[in-house]
Image (cartoon, rainbow, N blue to C red; front, side, top):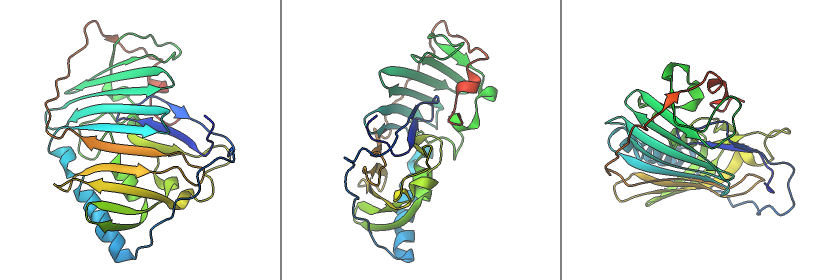
Length: 254
């Protein structure tokens, strides 16, 4: 990557240790995006709209698209009501696929992980690290990780269906969806007050959360769509038991 800001990683409720690291700034970084000023009451009202806008996660099926600097992307379909989900993670030409059916978790990766093949594997959910976030349980079942973004907002203002403000990217943490991790020198100056823009649809559902490149941080986007669509996840044929070597390489703790 040419942009060096923080170490960015992405999981779609399903992710390996996929991280794009960046180094010192190149000098070609976009100028800082103007931020929005809002008092505490205005911010609280906007945040409540965003929280209400994610209630669909426990109510219907949906699609999630996440992108970080066009380097790492995920596409996932989730139906928490009927416990069905799939995800495709693409990073630097390598693809990882994951399927979830009730309590069953399957994965196939194009990454060259030590001791791990490229065939479909059946994972033991009890051995999956907590930050791998494979769950249909409320509070852990959003492959977009919207709650972590909303909780990191510092100021916000709602104008119709648009919500703009600032977010502390150092507080986003790791988990499903957009992940931003500090580089060797920590987060760049200004990461604690980065602009964001979110959009609600006509039914008040969150449909996009955009973080523009600024302050040395890469751009990132989260989008929700296809609400209520049928999700049919098939068990892969010939899946083998995941090897012991896989589990320590899952998650974002490395």
